[in-house]
Image 1 (tube, one colour):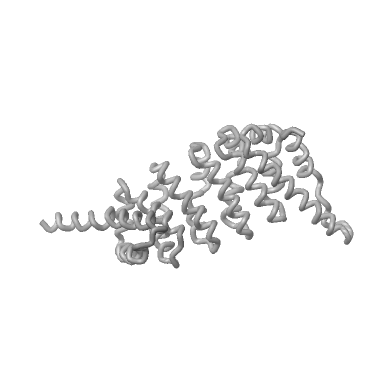
Image 2: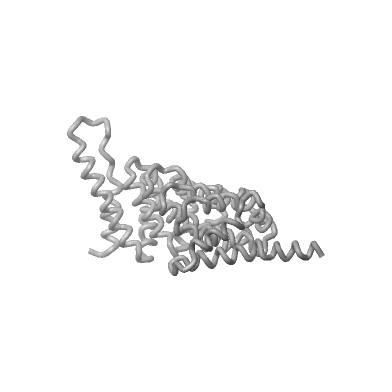
Length: 279
């Protein structure tokens, strides 16, 4: 059987009407079997759509709209996260699919799932799909900004789930690096204060991305420097302590480099400026 036929079969499973919850007892086993079938169908489609031609074919077959309309808000979390994963697989490196998904207004739904879904796997996969729609995609980034996506990332970095924190901090760093024109928007939200508060939590590997984002916000941007130098944040002392904590740890070298870079950008220059003013 060719791959398009396999996709059609999987879509047929996903398109079937679901068992009515009001039907009599004894339907529970059937419902469980139907859920298992749907999960397997999603897994088959995600695997097939790693091939870009198949991702395009799934779009033509109406599979993406099915994900968006029926499964992103499905009561079963296992189907919600698999739908988000499939959207991400299809959108990654595929401008045609990205544009199609943006036209059907999927981004607000994905941001909502990232922000408030009760299941951590759903939040992680929704954030992955958001990333695939906004990185190196101008229309996606504009939609992300207009739907307050940076606020969603800011809250996600304070999540209890390590994967959500890591992926949101990495996406923020990537977006600021590639799109410095949005620094002002981010700073106006109080992002520096929020990022520093994240660094004050127990140390975690994702702090590397947080420090990288702070470096982006201060480089060639006076407002970012001013925010980081605010003495109430205690950032200079925090950076000194973090540097001591990371010294000699090879696995933390990149984070250590960000610490040193941020310290030099914010506080070495400040000392130079202060000396110049004294003269």
